[in-house]
Image 1: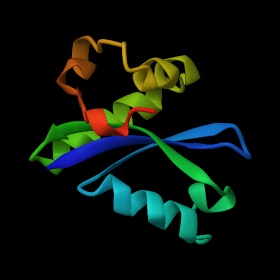
Image 2: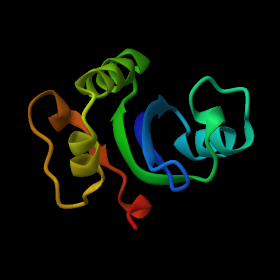
Image 3: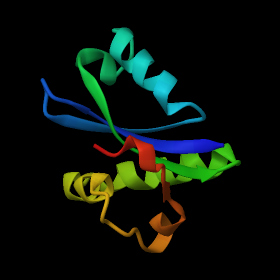
Length: 101
């Protein structure tokens, strides 16, 4: 299964959207790898939301790119809100409930 995940750096006040088959492992990698192009520049990443997407990596890639192309902090804030109900292309996102704050 592939997932879309959203992480947040408190120190930099920025979000990052990614996709992975294991978002919890990726969070550790983001926090421990200073070589990463974007996330390596910042520290103290927190997992804010995880969404189950598909068994197909291509589907997860497509959704990740769609979200990033929006360049919208408001969209990311909506996605991390547990009460938000995605529509359109995002309606295939299924929130993984135990990640909620």
